[in-house]
Length: 381
Image 1 (spheres, rainbow, N blue to C red):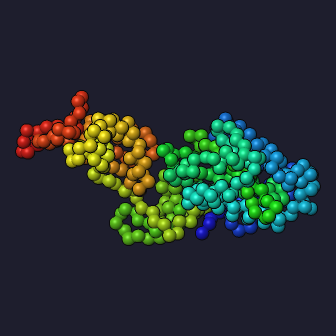
Image 2 (image 1 turned 90 degrees about the vertical axis):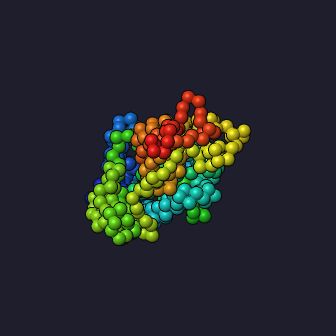
Image 3 (image 1 turned 60 degrees about the horizontal axis):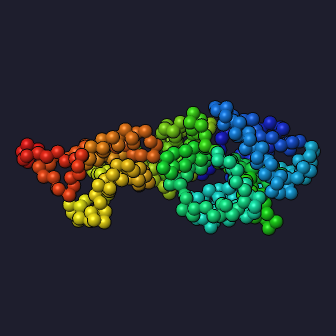
């Protein structure tokens, strides 16, 4: 099920295809192309970002003119669009480009690099732009790291706008989790090829400013376990401003973007109530069980654990664990709570600190610190 916003018809001097999968409603053909003022307001909260967004629009139009004869000035001349590019043709281009757009994002979800690369124009004229600048050519894209996939990509608010016959502009909002959480807007220009296929000719991605409002999203049709003890049920979860606003039967009017989650489960974050951040889960972190210190020095292993707990943070979140309790370890585990709370890429952490014990295995004793507090007897402990 795909939900769309209920919005007024666009002004007569612009055209836009909304993100619906059904044929969109069109306004009259414009005499010249311009970007919707309503759409620009999504970047208005930051003056600097708004300048970048406008610059991106100029880049997209310039790239379109560079990459396809369909963007030649004659196609944009006053009065030319009404006769040569009617509403039916614009709708057909929009539907075709939107399908390719969603397919492009699906290859990221499936981590299918060959399919991902097939969506792009295999030409030196391919344009990719982001905060670091502009890159040209397909070879640079194809030569990238084949394993550089994000842990999570949430794509929503797809919109497409036909610019000229065989040329469609598209944009969507994204949230990426990969060692951190980022939100932003990514754009595409799709160009129809002589064989009728569509390729991405221009691709951009710009992170939203920190004070940019988080768009409302609804996950519909999922099976929900709400943590109250109630039986699982199908329903909807609505998130506004980054927080859960509704679970169950929810109002999807207004600015809510609906994502079909049929066949999926939505559950509360899991809690792992017995972890040790100062152990690796293997013999290098427990030389008292199997001594491999000649190959894996224990002090180096512990130092690496202290310096890089984010490896475990990422593993927990990818497994659906959003809270952990460290039941005993070195004193530095106390500091993990504050460190985790400052990050959107870490679960909540509670830590007990050093273990109380009548016996401390010698291989686990390091100079200058201790993960055990020795007690003289079981009764005293």
